[in-house]
Image 1: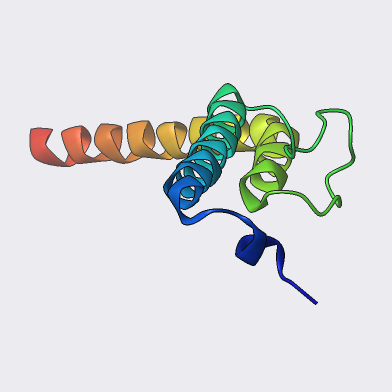
Image 2: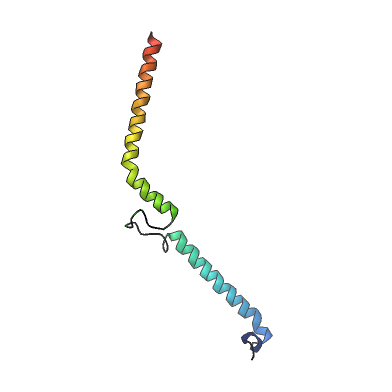
Length: 94
């Protein structure tokens, strides 16, 4: 039983190898372009936060859910900082 490569003349072997390399480069370029555009395997935005997608996607959903809580916490910290600054000013005046 003859292998397909044995039936090819040796003069065609470099062209076959070059063709396979070009096909591989084309597939790699298409994959790179797909990843760069952001298409393909990224989870949809309408999935719930418990979906198993990219780890960053799940953090994005958590951030969106906790954004209002974070704003309240920042406002609370700013209020505490103002209170401490006022107390420090009063202490320095005495």
